[in-house]
Image 1 (tube, one colour):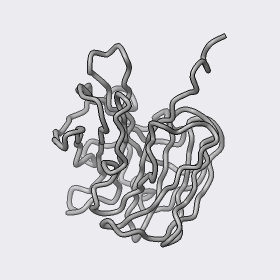
Image 2 (cartoon, one colour):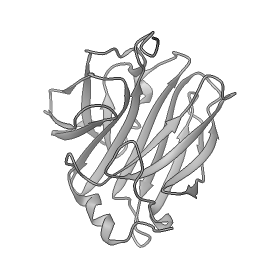
Image 3 (tube, helix red, strand yellow):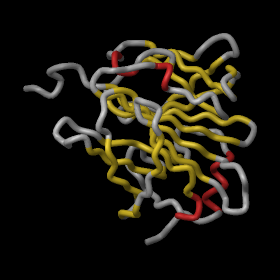
Image 4 (tube, one colour):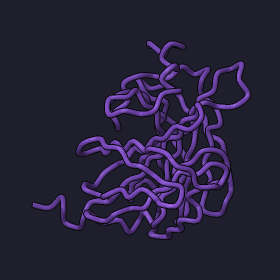
Length: 222
């Protein structure tokens, strides 16, 4: 299995573009999984499909924080071009799944990824952020998003809002950029259901956030 080389990690220091090589974590849950789910660490150019298997030596800080604030680590295994872990999502509320990419000789990661999952309709935006490091933080409940809504998005550094650009890659539709002022959140217009990848870079660090927007009731019916 071919893994990402150290040369590929150079993209970790670049601001995202519409065709950028990105890295992200995404979670798959379902109504009939008996509280089980699947976490996928991905890399490539075709979100949400993974094109490249990241080198294992780069993976770090793989953690899941549950609705009660409890934290557990997870250890994925390589399956084709994706790192996958089967995990428990056994309580309603906000789940935060994260990972980082870090060179073995470095103390701090250069890339951090986070996935937000809301189960059972028990949402709380106060659980979206940790207040540590670089973060992209939605400013409204994800579980109530509808097509046409504008979702306020902020960039924070150690809990303080900062200016910057956010690259938006939806599962369906075209990639775009948002600008976030220090006192003015960016506004993400929800134009399609499915998964979203948001990335931003600040002083050599990159943060990637994923979340999903539910399809309207009856959207899959004929």
